[in-house]
Length: 524
Ligand SMILES: Cc1cc2nc3c(=O)[nH]c(=O)nc-3n(C[C@H](O)[C@H](O)[C@H](O)COP(=O)(O)OP(=O)(O)OC[C@H]3O[C@@H](n4cnc5c(N)ncnc54)[C@H](O)[C@@H]3O)c2cc1C
Image (cartoon, rainbow, N blue to C red; front, side, top):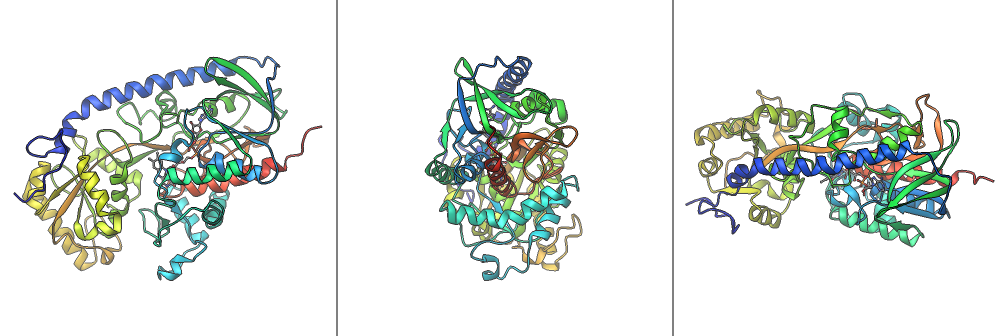
């Protein structure tokens, strides 16, 4: 028996974790969607109701700068403002701070870093102009060039800010990722999103920022469409109260991937059959509240689907990251017939569409790699824990693995031997994959498979901002004293967000929002 048994107590004699999970799929999809839809419907309705109410004019508190949301964008904004001497309070609706930022993988895209690792590793030239062009191209040129340029130009400084200012550590490697024309991914910066959030939170609190959890902003107050924002309504438990804001309001409340109702308004194609990789608070109600006081939105239909999530839970877990890094070193994606169905190095959107076409009734596709590739994608420990969780399967031979995955072995062997030949010849005549000469052929075992299926990963549309992070109204005028940063905003990534571009976006625009909010003149 060449196949290694997966040590999961719930597994059958066949060690068939993937198959168990697949048969489990149907029920899981149903229940998670119901849960998400239920909470989302409530949040959307609550937002609308709050905005329909008039301000009572009774203020229970007066604050200088209020930041809504405690992810990367909110913490960066709050820190920047506090370090300029402002009194800043961060309001977070969830019991725990961090939002999506705390569950992300810490991949950070930048064309340089303070140690100039790319020179040290002889990775060739890169620069902000090239980074910006990649962002625009990947987003089908829907990204707003002025905003894109700001992110690409300031990403190296944002990385330095994290490393030197917040004491975050990076690995001494700069990786390639699909859609980026040059290796520029600083992988697992800080180790994970959680570590990164902790470091930022510590720095924010050392600067005097106060973070209050379980406080949901349910309305934004502004007295007329030419007046500044003056406050917010906040709900804590059943109690609602109003906060008067003297200096500025910064919205950093993230996207709406988990708001099925809202997603359906803007993009009916990404319906209830999709799970989401996001945290439950990604419900987007503040985008609606901002619209009520005159804010414009942009590109709300661009909902990003991540191709490599766990087919059962929709989670973007550690094994999912292997599929992000694998194509550069020779990983291939196959369907249930053992056939490749896409250029594995294509951007996530293209891969996800191809998966949905190829996935069949089982709604699963597989990423294939061998032992020789592991160190370029992750660690052996991650393989071991991924196998325990039933996410990776292992076979000494391709035929073993194929039988395990219920793929006809001869199909898989042919697909792999063709791909090995393409690597030797340096050309992929079927899918046109580039840089074949950098890849490792799937010649020697053991071989591994990862199950993967698309899930909603991010919303790329949101509040329209300018390069100063001011929220714009429908006439393109900045709404006085209202700023926004991070996934709550739209127009930066266009139709598709490349891996590692979100953290720089959040830090860059968070810092800009914080600095400009701090520079607002105090009203008399
Ligand atoms: C699993 C996963 C992995 C990822 N990995 C990467 C990666 O490696 N690299 C990368 O660049 N990007 C990655 N991303 C994307 C990235 O993590 C997010 O785009 C980014 O963290 C968004 O940050 P944010 O500050 O805008 O929002 P968030 O971090 O989501 O924070 C927003 C916060 O606002 C709160 N909030 C919302 N509404 C209200 C309200 N009304 N009142 C009070 N609080 C409110 C939310 O509860 C939340 O805590 C990943 C995403 C996921 C889901």
